Amino acid sequence: MTATLTIDGGGGISLPTAFLEKFRLKPGAKLLADVSDDGMALRPDGDTASAQARLEDRDGFLVFTGTQPFDAVDAILAARADREEELSAMRAK
Image (cartoon, rainbow, N blue to C red; front, side, top):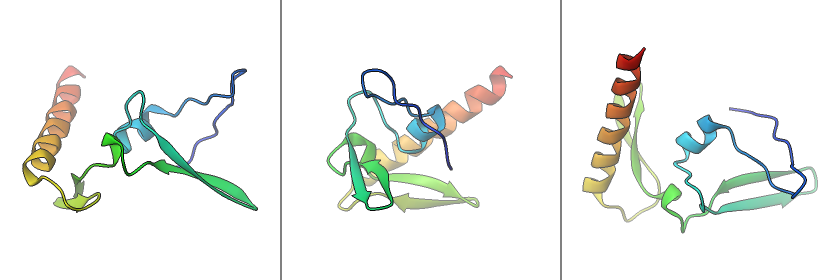
C-alpha cells in the first residue's frame, strides 16, 4: 500500500483512511519515524493502542498479529467487531 502525502502549512500530514484502518490508528496515536540517508518510514509506536494484538483474516485463516503478551479475548472481540463493520457496510450498499 502506497500513498502520496502532502505536508500542510503547520507541518502536519493526513493519513489515508485505509492506513488508519489497517493499523487501527485513532486520534492521538503515536507514530515512530525511522529515518535513513535515503528516506523515512513511519510505523505505529508499540506503546499505543494501535499496536495491540489483533487477529487478521489471511486467506480465510485468522492469524495473530501484534506484540506479545496479548489478551486473546480482546483480540477475538476486535476481530468480531471488524467483521460486523464489514457486514454492515455490505448491507448498506
